[in-house]
Amino acid sequence: MNAKLKRIVAVWAIPSIVGVVLAVTGKTYLPESIASQERRQESVVPPVYFDSVAVTFPSGSSTFPPGDGADIANANCVMCHSTGMVLRQPPLTMTEWRTEIEKMRGSFGAPITADQVDALARYLSTIDGRKSDAVPSGVSNEAS
Image (tube, rainbow, N blue to C red; front, side):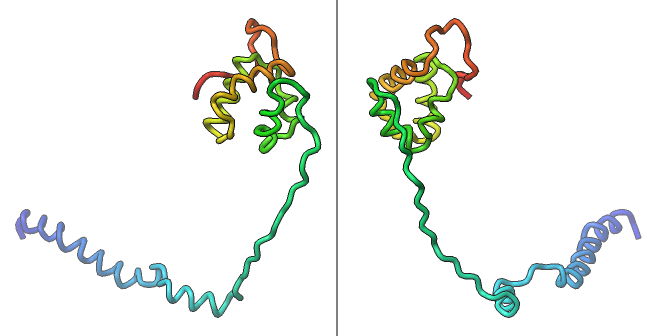
């Protein structure tokens, strides 16, 4: 047998033989059909039924300290955060609070309107803020 004929046989015969062997032996390894899965599962596993459960969480009793912007914070921040959680943040400047509020609006969908951002940042920096930009806080204001 010449070299050209050997190459042709190798290219066509070997994959054909491998395919036949896999077709014959692979039948036991192939996934079963959806219909046979359903029949098998109905006979082995009892059906499972799910009921919905209504869960009500207690409403928070605390509100933000009075001041210009407290109504914005009480209406928008406490739907996701407790008042205590917001007030325990590190002291931030108004610029840093504005960045945090914009992050909540953009990334997490906080329903604060664009015209409320400055008033809320001013309020939060007034009740729990750093007065100077000279000392960096623990919050990174870099865009990711």
